[in-house]
Length: 404
Ligand code: C5P
Image 1 (tube, helix red, strand yellow):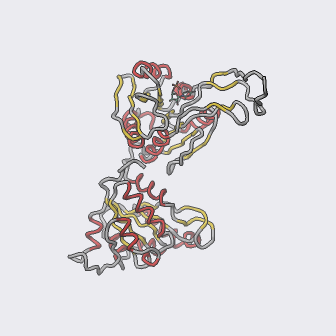
Image 2: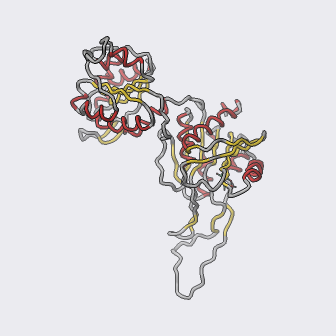
Image 3: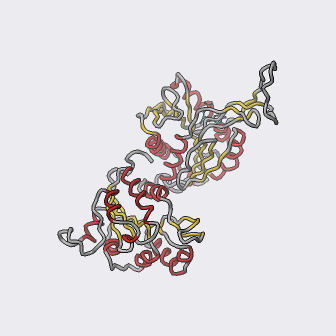
């Protein structure tokens, strides 16, 4: 999550009854931490699962649940609450509440304000697998989609009732990601983005190897930003301890050769390739089958290195190459090396990290190198910077890459 990425957004968080109400405490915390203001509205049933006091404490606002609430001077809570909102999110959305929405019913505060809304509506279903599969529920969900309502999830897995299947609510973090994504402009809608991220690991023997200090943060942040911008995103990652961004397909690899093979397999289906990985330039030519033993008096081992394939340059050379973006982490003279590297790799855009190596840090300062010259961007957190870079990439896409 980027700091304050939902600043200025006001959400009505509508809770209907279900055991997944416990997840909404965490969701409220995530939304407010990102800068959103959250007005919780609960159905009578929701108040049986978690108290309005808890939701008030977490959202910092009194909770509404009754149509007849005397706190609203004109007694028009159903109008006032939705008029202030940038979106209404129903989480959890029970079987019953989905049915009510699909039929435009308005018999309590939450359903009434949904019917009276003039803002987008997102629903996050949560129910037993049989209830989800029930033809009536499926009909209602299809109707909601046809009415332009966003349906987030549901997830699949173990359920509170002990059964396993589709219907459980997305976790709070995934729900947050889906909401954050909803608010981003879809500047990469219809585009397919392939990225590499993280370091590679080149084994010496079964237990040792050579790697580097890339954390993968910048590549993962770009994958998240591209997904939020509406692209289909495939992320090929070296060994990193990072969670897969929501909605992104991830493939894990270890070595540069594996990364090369994975990229070459996938790339015909993509129109943008962003090489963010810090790929090892060399690997040992013979990986020892057994652990290299340290024996007294024995001379230290020596290794012969061979060069790894350059993934970015190889992709850029393909006959129907996607729009290619490279990265460069230099320890000095970036202005000279950055442009040289861009030309050598034959890519239209190369992003150079300014200053000391940025590996592992949460922020970054970069220069864009392209045929027309170099442009420096202000220092920013990696997630915010990723959003800016995706916008910069989107601006530069040739129309011809729309259909490959
Ligand atoms: O040559 P250098 O490693 O500095 O180039 C960095 C850029 O090239 C990055 O975009 C990186 O992902 C990519 N690269 C690659 N395959 C390599 C080496 C670098 O794709 N073997």
